[in-house]
Length: 361
Image (cartoon, rainbow, N blue to C red; front, side):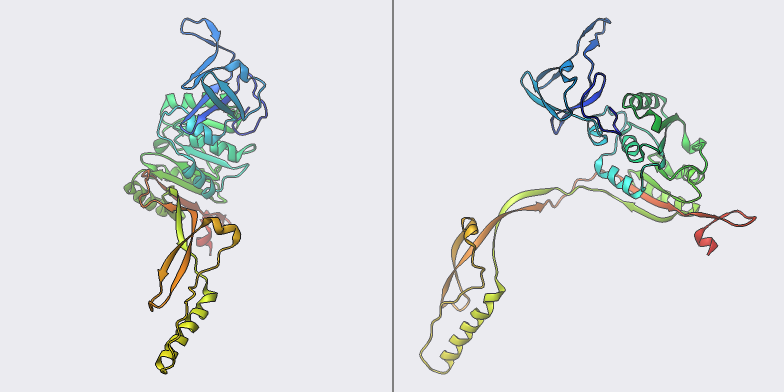
């Protein structure tokens, strides 16, 4: 079992995700026995709000199986970076699927990419990086907090993605990445990201690359953008990713058929002309421009009388009820901004230094 590769059946010592509801998701190691505080080994029974689960019963089951609890049921799912982000133990604030998807797309991460990440934090984004660059790429991730580095190293080994990632305890703002011309992309999640931008220039490949900086406030974004442009980065763009919620509602609307408007106008014109010429007043029942309902749709229609503008006739106008999504006016945000920039390819001049494409032109 690996978070970067899919397995079919659950084996002993695998990490699985126990899914009970959207807000009740638990990571679980499939170990038949566990040690108590006194060191005694007992049968591993996992307790939930819907009862207990004997963990040994999971061995040999297929991922996605519905398992019985003593007072309900749950699903045993294969771990993915998205599920791990919802179930992981929080050591820091983390990024979720909306921001992560944007980062992977904008940084152009693909199998074989070399990525630098600082800081590691709880490892939410790290797992998505590893899956995207697997199997031939590599992730270099840094954190200045030693305990978080050790916890991340242990998780990567447990999830069997250790060969694809290197975790280092380092203050990259002061000491740099200690990597030169190796990275396709750099991600910065730091209190002072502008201090790490010059070190990112050294780490990016001369063939070019991408950089992303995550900042919680606009002042940090502005200062980072200034340093990015000063260092020679191009296409500097800042995004804020928000999820818009839609409420499902049933509404009713009149259906309008423009092909019948001409007949309505002709009938009204005939009435006006006949009255003006002194002939016998003609009263015509006005047919409104409403589409005739299909037989299959008749059960969804409601009718009500409507008086026309000239007051001489009445028509029955059908209404159609249907389900639609209505966006909410207020969109909750998470006060996080993603700044992306491109490091242009460097051209080696004969007997001279590297220059950018624009300088060469």
